[in-house]
Amino acid sequence: MKTIVIYKSKTGYTKQYAQWIAEELSADILPADKVSFQKLAEYDCIIFGGRLYAVGIDGLSLIKKNFEKLRGKRLIVFAVGASPVSETTQSTIRDANLSAQQQSAIKLFYFRGGFDYAALPFFDKTLMTLMKKMILSKQRKGKELSSDEAGMLELYDKATDFTKKEDLHDLIQAALIPF
Figure (tube, rainbow, N blue to C red):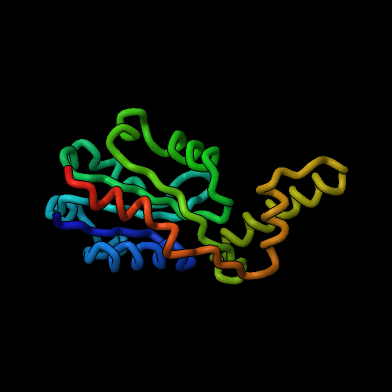
C-alpha cells in the first residue's frame, strides 16, 4: 500500500509527528502547500496532520474539499494541540471538523503537541495574550478555572513540548490494517 503523510505546521509539533509517522510507515511526506489532488490520487493511504486553531484543524480543507474524489482510499487525520488528550477533546475536535459522513470514512486522532509563545506569529501572539488576560480576569473574580484554562496559564511563560513518538501506536496500526 502506497502511503503519504501530509502536514501543516506552524511551530513544528505537527511536523515532528508527521516525520515520525512517515518514518514508521516508510511513507512519502510533504507539507500541505506542496500537495495537489493529482498527487493525492497516487496514494492508497492518505494521512493528514494539522494543528488545532481554536477547535479547527488547520489545513483540513485539503481533505474535505476532495473527500468525494478520495472514496476508496484509507483516510487518516491527526490534529495536534496543547490541550491534554481526552475522549472529550477528541470528540469535540471530531464533531467540529468532520460531518457524520466524513466521520464514518476518516479515522481521527488527537496528539498533544506543545506550546511556545515565542515561536508564534504576531497575530497568534495577540490572540494568546487576549486569552491570557481573559483567564486572569476570571481568576481575579474568584471564578473557577477549567483544567484547560489553568493549564494554559501554567504553559504560557515557558516553552513546553509534549510530543512523544510512542503516542502514535494506534495511528500506525490503523494505517497498516489491510483494507
